[in-house]
Length: 233
Image 1 (cartoon, rainbow, N blue to C red):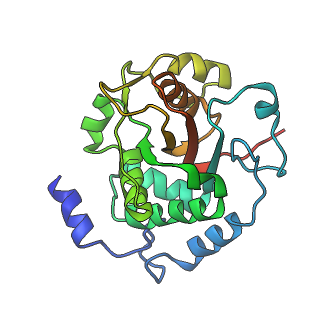
Image 2: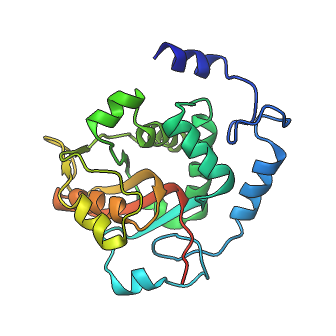
């Protein structure tokens, strides 16, 4: 906790996203170029993954419990590095900047104007203890502050699940089925929820979390992630 506080108050040198100390600027030119390109990429209008700009095959076949999801960019390059630095190296000095990227995405999507509360997708208590924080909650907190919306920890990870890496879509859904629950006495009735996570790959995590919120009484769930996978056909 002490090291994290020092990082927040006195950020170490280097790009906030990639961490390269040899590049100039709070965010280096390479990372800025990546983000500028990301803003122009076509994406699926439902799940937000990057592809041809049409509804992807998964979203045509499977019903999504969330209305839509959007991302600041693809899960590669600067964003992949930033997420890995945050989750695995505990480099939190870039959270404010990343929250700003999420807020920018919100301004580009009119549907987000319906949101009345920001809810992070929770990690397991074990991983939270290991990292000292929940990365989705850090991002959601920064976003909520920027949007002037309340941050509500309405979800909890009830069942620890093994890592999703290497699993297919069906395996991921089975892995996460029933793993999220709604906390006691949430004021969910009729709420339009802005559900925040760090990465969207197949959508299994966001699906499980959105299903729990809808079962708890939410009227609608809108997803938002920092990075989303590309659609390969």
